[in-house]
Length: 311
Image (tube, rainbow, N blue to C red; front, side, top):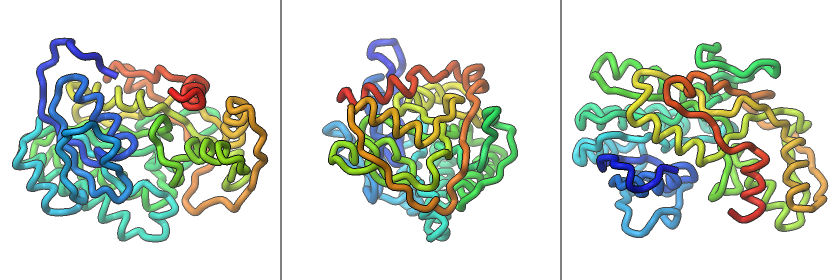
């Protein structure tokens, strides 16, 4: 996280999805810098209790017209747009809901940025690529072959953001996250496998694995993701960046690590693979290292040790 007292000029910033797992962590980091953070969150999955007392929060969906109006009225220097429908399986079952949240929601945020003259930092996903190679991590120019409406809606939103720069002159930076984990993550949803494993271990229950467990993911710590967002405030305009570690870990391997750290042997339940799941996801962050001066600093072993150690 950024430290206080570094001579940074305070800014007014809007964070959509600011009561969520990543968003609330980002809000705290912004406040530590001395910035003013205004949160937009419909609290359908977010929790206002994650936020420090006194933070201004507006209960709106990203796709509400009020979101654009609020951004236009408060005129933030930057809008961090994290509000989204993030479930692969949910997007397959309810693609219209996914599109409203991720596409229409992004358009509303862009409308607000246009009126306010704000920069947009957009939280995208490795899901825009679909499956990656086990032998080489994906770069930003890799083909976009989303395996579920979630990845597709994020890719469409990225295209609108690119056009908005041309149409309206909105500066932007796009961050494509790998699988984010860390303190405060809820034990639900397809992306929260670390939190799900921790909860089941704490309750003495077998770990549930979808598929054969040999599917692999690039796990990046939430605090590293927050640092990437802060780096994007003044860097990376007009570009998209992968935010990952470049290291693929199988779900079986993750389960082994979690059980070892917890000194537990819970057993496994293998259930059918979920619709829209990719086999392998692994991102190269070389571009972010060069342009954002960002690189992941917390290894998976270190991040898991912190979680199981309670820090």
